[in-house]
Length: 295
Image 1: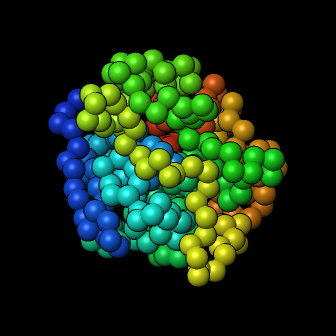
Image 2: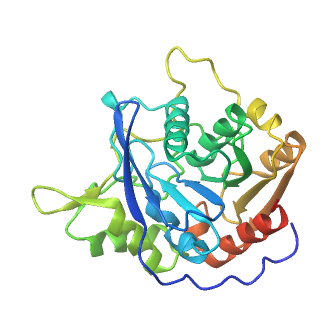
């Protein structure tokens, strides 16, 4: 896409989302419901070591137009952790399917970032009749070959501090990594993404076992996400950040070749977390796509 996205309304004030918990596949899974249940449903799936509240700005902008559900994937946010740290792409996809079934969503728009984009690709491949439109946020069907198991999460702790004296200290730390992002969005992510330890310090809510791309679950067939992408025929938007190294020109061109109904757009002056670095541009790009592909 070469045209600029339309101007977006400022985030709408109002009550926050409602928290919902479901017992799914041996874990208690949490998701946020932003209300407006009569509107078209839109489901958001975050990236690794993040949580449902990272979509807050986008949801505040769109709560009047859509019924927005944002998931905490297993091991993240306020959802339960996997026994023994055993996470897999198949497991995440089954969790998403179970939550959608429990909420009675027959067809919806699906937006996934990073790991969430890979989960969304697999889900759309396995449940093609359920996904009306798909948005992939800074992730294609493959990773650059040189990255190996590089961690593309927003919280790149190398070396970590694993805990902090206060949320303000954690916000300073994360703001030094997310130099482009508005501080208030970083602070919002920290507020909802940390838990207080018995000693009074704060640490991230995600399972420390998480890191890198989730492996295939033992006993499951290897899933070729390129093959999965090739069979997806619903309208799809791939957004990628100007400063991100995840969606390379080679991956971008292959995605255009493999997917029959793909649109792409680069978000300027943004890294991997487009919705935090450039929240207005991100919301504008998604909004125009949804308008253009509305039934």
